[in-house]
Length: 158
Image (cartoon, rainbow, N blue to C red; front, side, top):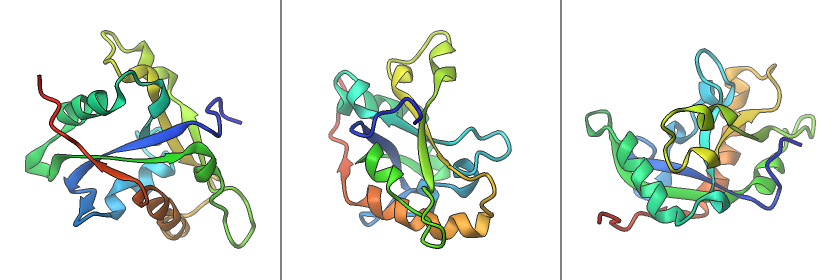
């Protein structure tokens, strides 16, 4: 186990049109290099929804901070699933668990911390032996899972 409980809700902040178009998640919502923790990537950035106070408002503020309209990263919303459902994605050839959710202790060391940092987590492939091609095929299950529960932001400006 990774320290993130099965019952916890996990959320991925979404930007349009990079990650979502016409209500459908795009492959860019879960980049393979992040899922494989390659290069300077530690994993695919997510948040532990239940650890956030007023999560919809905080996730909106986080999206505003990381938006980059010239690079197609416009504030859109977030998607939600449970840790258990992520862990239940299996490699059909071996029945091995494909993805794990890890807390990200490095984010809470940042000074000054953002109000969502304590809830930051990472999704990574369980097997570092997966090829990029194999993980691209398995990623579709992760996309389908998160696509079931998409929330478009309301405007939380004060």
